[in-house]
Length: 422
Image (cartoon, rainbow, N blue to C red; front, side, top):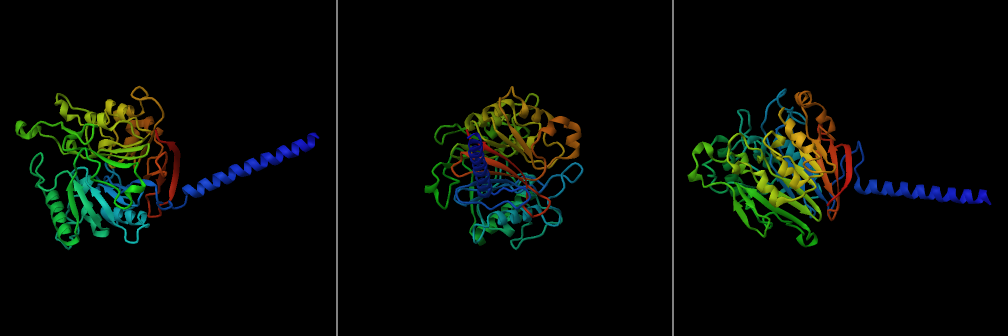
């Protein structure tokens, strides 16, 4: 009798194990992130956030649940090694072309891939590109660099920035970089029908699902800040945080970083924040309004994932900002040996600022950083590669996937999660 009971129990144990193994295999097949294999493509209902690593500045590709796309920044700047990171995958193409090729691959669900929305957080070369002496010239006469190079290889339907149409805040923007960008806009508008808009803080109807909005009512892109105008958190109301420009000496006007755009992308319980290079740690006796992070944090609230402001530079991620957002996952877009600052990383990992676990991922990390910062960098979950946040349909759970950036294999190096959205 005991033998029969043992054999029955063994059969049930074996059956249970087979069920568990089968379930795991099904989950693996469903989510498809197998180590060493190419990342499976986007599927309907999924929100993908790709922090693309070219080694030359910021760029992120978002694929919305309805399959539409948004590109945030397309940097082509920074320093060469050893102070800066090396171009990824290599220097055989410009960063804008690499970004466009990445986007075309990830948007393969479209018969004719295009960027539905592209927006620049602010006007610095590591976020938009700047014309160099060796830059190629487009048919429109402008130089190909950063965002202008992206559009040469994949169409951009709508461009959003902080300055359209006059580009005169906080003072006229007339350097060579801006003249090249404005020539690009004018030509694209005239010849390709590109739409151009200024980002309006407070609104949640400027960046929307253009293909099937009714199917995903719990998806929203909320404009948080631009040019010091910050959403209050109520309806579409905003408040100007900067003084009037006519009341300020020219050397005390807001910096370009202070004018950065910020948005929050929400999908069910999942929230993602990105805020360009906005600062939050004031220097010396500067006025309170130089801290942009604090009023932004008051309106954003807790998020699951946050891209570090200003690459984690020393003037960013103040304690109030971190305590308000309490991100479970933080992503550092690195291209320089001062990304991130030691104090910034110390605040990020501080359990006094906000309790609970957090995982930090970096697109790159230079040896100089490792030598100076030391053991804190040993806590990074990843320090090389494209960082992909894949949010499951409905937004209740998400994963972080690291892709090889040494070639266009899009090979999965590591998978973290699933994480539960709050």
